[in-house]
Image (tube, rainbow, N blue to C red):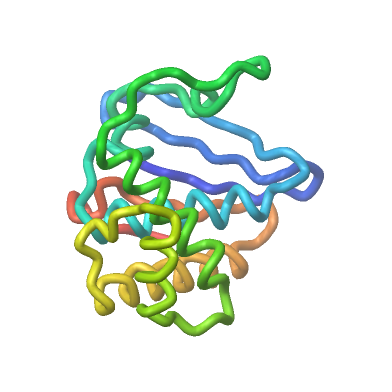
Amino acid sequence: MVVQFARHSDKPPTLTCIRDDGSVTWFRAGHNGEFFVAHDLLHYAVETTLGFSTAFYGMIAAGRDLNDFGSQDGRPDERQYSEEALQAEQLVGLIQVLFPPGAEVEFSLFENACRTNAIGDHAISADLLSSIHGEWLRLLDVWRNTPTQASLSLEYPRDKLGHSE
């Protein structure tokens, strides 16, 4: 699947996913466009580094629409999510809050946050956490340097064809 983050001159960023079967789903960010891009790039870093296949991007590749996540019309999302999907969301949330761009990754802080919030550490080592964070920062840098009216394109899963920017 091709994952494309597009930068526009007159509207917020969009995320388009082109599945291997040729079907397409897309989403336009609201006023929080840069947060949306950072969050979904971190999902990419987490899921591809850990080899997840049933988390956010795996669900999209399997046919789920990008606009079919979270609450709908103020009602909580009651659908079942895979263990990988739940783990990925927890990891993305923790990393994004604890180690934003410019912050140093401190593994003890991550471990303490996992314990405090009753979140399993998902067998994430200090090296793996650093790898995920480093990949996220690299992707954010590529995004920041993506010109207006251009896209950052990635392959999912990453090891299928390698990824391209």
